[in-house]
Amino acid sequence: MNFSGKRVLLTGHTGFKGAWLLAWLDMLGAKVSGFALAPPSEPSLFALIDGAALCAAHTQGDIRDAALVRKAFDDFAPDYVVHMAAQPLVLPSLAAPVETFATNVVGTAHVLDACRNASPKAILVVTSDKVYANDGSPHAFVEADRLGGHDPYSASKAACEITVDSFRSSYFAGKVPLATARAGNVIGGGDWAAYRIVPDAVRALAANSTLVLRRPEAVRPWQHVLDPLAGYLAILEKGCDGAFNFGPEAAARRTVREVVEEFGKAFDGKPGWTIENANPPPEAPYLTLSAAHARDTLGWAPKLDFQTAMAWTAAWYRAWRDGADMRKFTRAQIEAFSKL
Image: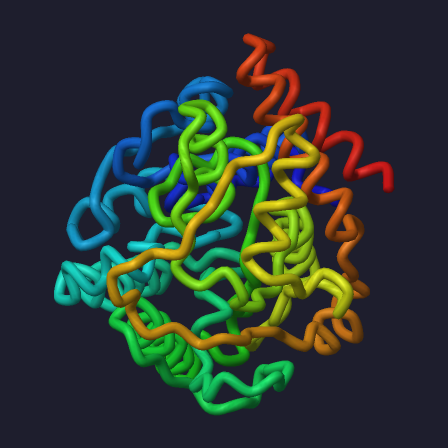
């Protein structure tokens, strides 16, 4: 991937996926301008890899602030834009729906409006696998399927897709490639977000406590973080338009319970778990994606199967637990992935 010397404006670079992409872009020789809120957790992958030092420019700000977003673009003049900043979780969206829509829809409009003046070579907006109108059936969603969303997070991401399409048609068509990426459930080292299964398992193992699961038999498209990130970079490099799904092969579609059991085995422990007694929020029992379009257009395919993805994730958390240099360890996993 040829990003040496390229100027990449990356929003959400302090988050879990954003920090992994920041580390990878730095290894590829890109100059990155990051725009994001402060890291969302303590500890954070961004802090452990000294992410600020990897940035040519680092702006701590909110994408709901249109003037600050515009200034970051005008000051940096990016070649490429990757928009990952978001309110990324279902349960917080139920507690704060207006904030979720403001961030995920209006914030995205601010970023795309700033792109109108910046004129980058390509733009990528990262949304979610939850943009689809999901009836719970074992249907592998394709990019042309109907958008929807029952909870505010899912609905806001579907609305984000519509917003992107509007900007594409109105301002960028035939001028600047504008793509969206819809990735399945992502795992990997360095995630400490609340309400995510691997971070919850790490906390339960560390505290020798019982892990509470909302829906242990729910099936999701689990994949290691580096697999979809490779797809994101391919979209930029090839200058692609439109929507792209990134999900694992059928064999990696596992239940929440299987994820907990496999992670525990790989982490040298086994967290006990119980089912949440309170009524959990409504969630589809089954979600999976077809990545045929990404395979056909980008030549993309997942490199890590389910067991390997879980093993790499557990190895990262073990190294962190044991006091390793996590920038070095993170870079080593990226390098190993790149050679596959």
